[in-house]
Length: 389
Image 1: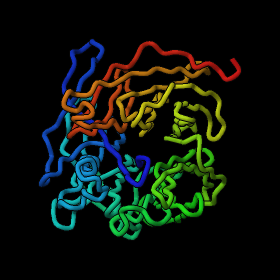
Image 2: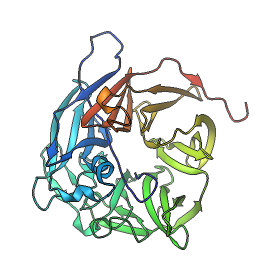
Image 3: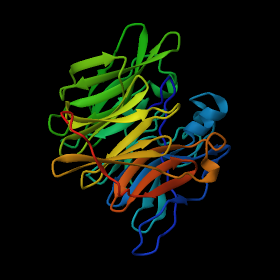
Image 4: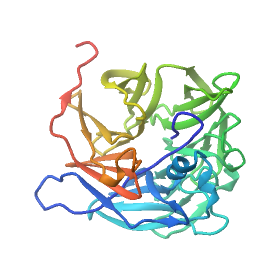
């Protein structure tokens, strides 16, 4: 998913240590040894979970952007394309998956990852090609025919994969043409592509993508970059046949939306600087919860569902909002994950990217080296008032 403006980014966080048996886990940061290529320091960002393992992209994207102001600065130094792994049960890092070894033809880094039920991990690199890797064998399959600029991923109801194309990647790092939604088969064959155009006189750069598993409808948000550099925001609802059902530009801004396997939808909106959590089924909103003012520079970056349906909404600041359904009513809880001192802002700039709820704990990837955060699962859940209450 991308930050507002012409810059894209995704980041995850991981760290390590163990807690005593029988005690509720307290805050903890798990850190793996630094990964560097030249002056580039790789950090964790977008993540996904399968079988108790977190898979996360490793990238220097934000660090090089902060240092240079250039969103393509990652390309200046050759490096490897890596997917980090963290085992939740043992609270330990596993060897990273190498999808492209260090060399002159490897300058981009891994952005988003999708832990597909078929056993493969799909990944994007934005400036270079996307592909998939099998964690059991290490086999890598790349999909160069799909082109460059692919950003975020989502699983379709029949196993297909959807990817947003923010821009055209290496040839056009500033996205001078409209982005798109790309549908691909499990083996990487392009099934279709829909160019997204929100308004004339501007570039539409697609960011996040989510798919309703029941209707097959696809939801995409986008930056709309005007000629003077100002940015508006758009949202699209797309039918399974890749025709546009609806689109809108302007407030409210859809920060992120995700769907559970049963079709439960969770979305975060910014309406005039105030955050709102929308809960429902597909496009039908059932309940809404006000989350208060949106702090400057904060962003709802990712949403993931636990097997019991609990949704974890991760904000860059380290705030995680949790939503679950019990006895036909929604419940909400919130916590603030503690960042290590060297990752504090602004001196040690860092971003929380993806969060996951497990029994007793909340985990998240932190863009501050190879780091994972853990916090206790809150026990002060509050019922979300029904809209009619």
